[in-house]
Length: 345
Image (cartoon, rainbow, N blue to C red; front, side, top):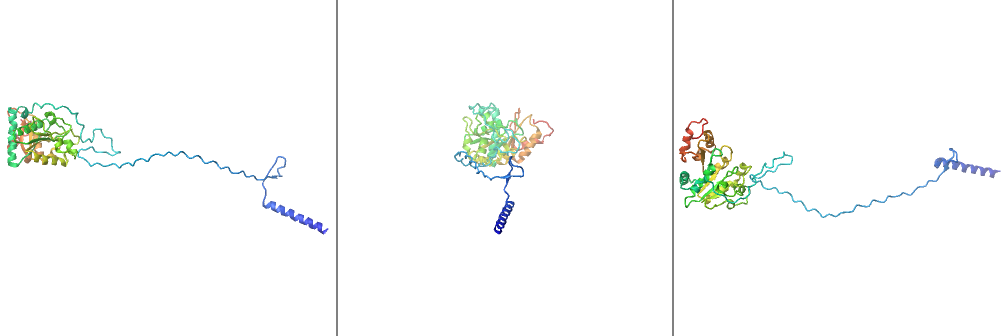
């Protein structure tokens, strides 16, 4: 009997051990429809193998030739009268704004001389004799003061300064041994080329902008004229900046060495400040006054702007019975008359 009870005790101990093991590690159960909810059948856990997705195919590689290195922009040296570049955030400008030299007119065949060039077309006429009086005055000043560069200007536009400048150059060139040049500095409203029938595609404006251009490239010697000519070239929209170029002083210095007389056709005095840039580069001024048209106040302002010591004389243009007044007392006596808005007579 003792063996039987020992066997029961051993069986009871094994049963208790299995119960304790079942409590410590419960096995998940899944209810089945045949068994009540309180009774669950143990189900083995099945782990499905993980499926690794295939990696996407790499995109095709397109081999492109390397782009050439972009050259850094080269900042050009500023040229006088050249176009000015504006920033992108600045206001939109007119297409014509800040253009140093306007487009030249298309080249044309040489034309005829203007009928008013009496020194060239009718050198024995009475009008040509009046310009010879101006020539005598300039020749005397050259002997006494070494005057070579003579500027021809006027108080306002329309006084005849360009026609007078060409006639004075023609009168000076009548001397057989005289070397004479005419330079047009009026780059706002050039007219010498038109009066002489010359092309105006190149001239002073291009010379002042392009440092590689030589004097001989713009110096013309028209046949039948007797003097060399430097026309203004294409009109400039920035004449003040253009005439500030140091190349203008170099040009006058070179002409002084080559020629006996240099006649300079300058812009009018009162409308523009350009004469102030030329005043110290020439030896003196001859002021062209249109009789019965130029106001006395404008003549007075012009003489003040030029400087009394820089005025070589005054020429009355388009006046009947009035010759070329060039002596130093002529403009003084002219200004001594009453100033009251009347016009020069």
